[in-house]
Image 1 (cartoon, helix red, strand yellow):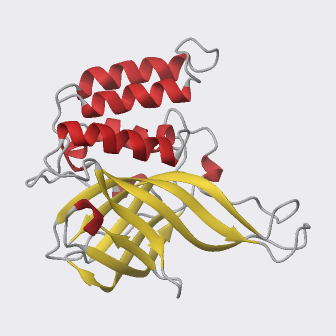
Image 2 (tube, rainbow, N blue to C red):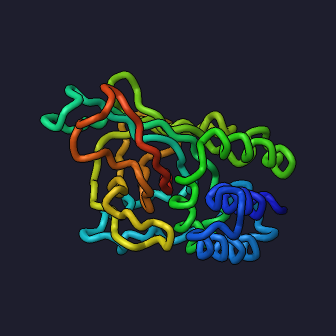
Image 3 (tube, rainbow, N blue to C red):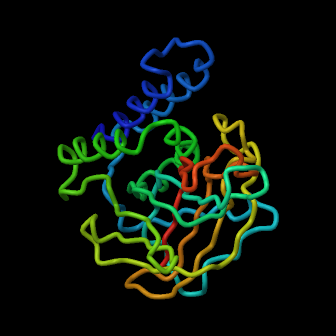
Length: 251
């Protein structure tokens, strides 16, 4: 199948502003050429039996390991926005986080075959609009997947009470999780060749179980973007910051 190959070509074209020879994007374009060759023919649907290693040692301190008895069920690439509010448009106030919204793209088979490539994708996806990624994934997914949702695994959002939700039912699964706060560590620096603004990456997280079905814990790792400015100067009362990340689901 050529779905993931096509996704990478699509990302390369968008990141390079429709030209593979745009100055400053040569390294990124060359990386995508390597990625497309490595991904050619890889299955895109969720792999039933896979056991990749969660990269907990990449941060200092490390996030806690998954709870005993849990197994990895899904890996997703999330692309969306981190959302903030400002009480005042001047420098006296700081942005306050009020949740996030993201589309979750199924990357379970990719992590089984090429984890290094997977870890590079959040920083590349963060440069492509969510609408473009979603449309492209659905169109190609209909040609290559047995399920109508194709590459789209689910959605991430926050409830009215501020709880993080991960709903995979849109992807044809029964699993969903209303998570609760767990552990947080700063995003490590220089993990991606394409992420030069490491201070702008939201932290890595381990979230626990508050309610749900099939999923007990979720990790947010290899984040790209999402951090707000240090002050509210010049900001609207509500604003969004683009981000992408990997999500690992255990149940």
